Length: 167
View 1 (cartoon, rainbow, N blue to C red):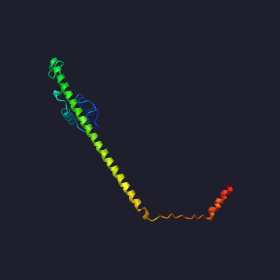
View 2 (view 1 turned 90 degrees about the horizontal axis):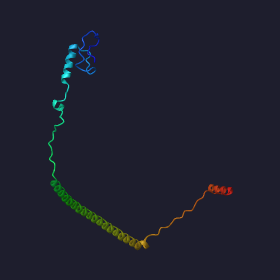
View 3 (view 1 turned 60 degrees about the vertical axis):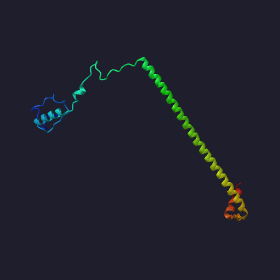
View 4 (view 1 turned 30 degrees about the vertical axis):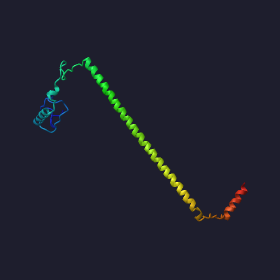
């Protein structure tokens, strides 16, 4: 911990080391009076925990109240009541699950029915289109297939002859 101003010699008075651990406070370039006042201020301003948080409970003391132990009759009544409630809850959940499954099944059946209707409509439209095409077929102009004559250049023929000669 540096408590001396710069350039001072070791013959100057040193502030006691008890006030603050060495290395935590550095006052370079200040007079001794300013250093001591600053140390007093910072030591007084340090945050110590409040005294309430430093209290320690003794072994015998407890902050909670003791809980009464249940008797055998109340335990059996509670268990019986819980099992009846549990059974009712299970029945309600089972009914809800069955209802949900039946709704999903009904929804899928409706989708399948709708799909079949759409496919049947498409088949009907296809059959109608084909029948109309067959009716108009004799009146359509006939498309002539143009056959192009192959024009073979002389160089290609020469190449073919050379290949045959190699074999």
